[in-house]
Image 1: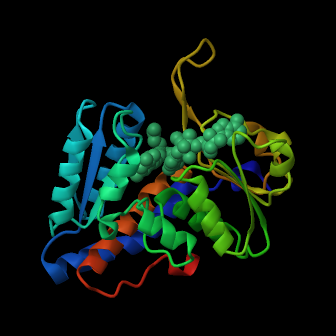
Image 2: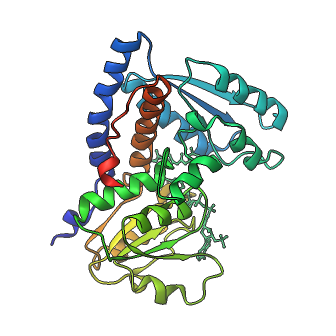
Image 3: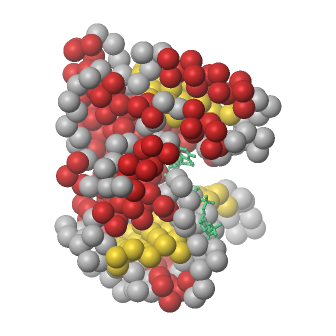
Length: 303
Ligand code: NAP
Ligand code: L37
């Protein structure tokens, strides 16, 4: 297989999902005479978060989803943020609420996530939604792992019995990813910074998911021949003598690994667009459910 054919096009899969989401947005408007609405709160100046939020709002607009953007200064107190969330919880015209993480150090992420109405928690980070996922009865599933699962299941028609290794155990990616793959009958290994002999675990993976935040740390010596590699990491390399411009790289050394793998997601253009498409999916799901409608989940077949 040519190396070019091994690249998983995240944009293609995102468009594939959005093509199914879009008519549901149109239908919602005709039925309820209002647009589906997503509220996004961003606290502080994190430049990466700004880009991600901008991409999310642009995709919402393209799909006829109204968005409310609340940008708060770094000094915002937890109490002030809490008040914003309560007001969005109470607003019947707001279907989904997303607080972009990370938050400034003085605000407790746990308290903030707990204060979001679980029925509007389109990120799936509220303990009720997180618990439901782990109990095998998911409601809102965190967007990044959901996007990864969608891609994996499209690429590999059968994943039962496969060995999946996830590097990273965050609540945003690693843990929910493990739960999803376990529910899909994979044998799952979760590795983290205290894991001994990381390479020995990774080399056994049929499906390798890197969600670490270390630029290009996974090279070909970590990867089994013909594995599927999903690179969640997004790391910005600042300009250097060699590279005049800043550039985005994943946690995987793409150039070294591509010769060995069956398929691999690139950075950018891999998991990122899928994360956003899944957010739109979760928002539409929230809107229908909160109007008391029976929502037939487009992604049900993937779980
Ligand atoms: P995080 O909360 O920082 O978690 C990183 C995980 O990697 C932790 O579990 C950590 O272990 C582990 N780790 C760190 N260094 C390691 C090492 N040398 N060996 C093995 N494990 C190591 O990060 P996150 O929020 O999960 O995000 C991970 C990456 O994905 C970041 O680059 C982020 O920007 C990216 N991301 C991308 C998307 C997307 O849509 N594409 C979405 C979310 C995040 P400990 O638990 O022991 O500390
Ligand atoms: N809701 N999402 C929520 N909460 C969080 O705490 N971290 C986080 C989160 N993650 C998130 O928004 N991730 C994300 C990552 C990448 C993109 C979007 C969302 C994205 O658009 N990536 C593009 C390139 C972006 C760029 O140029 O920097 C890509 O192609 O990968």
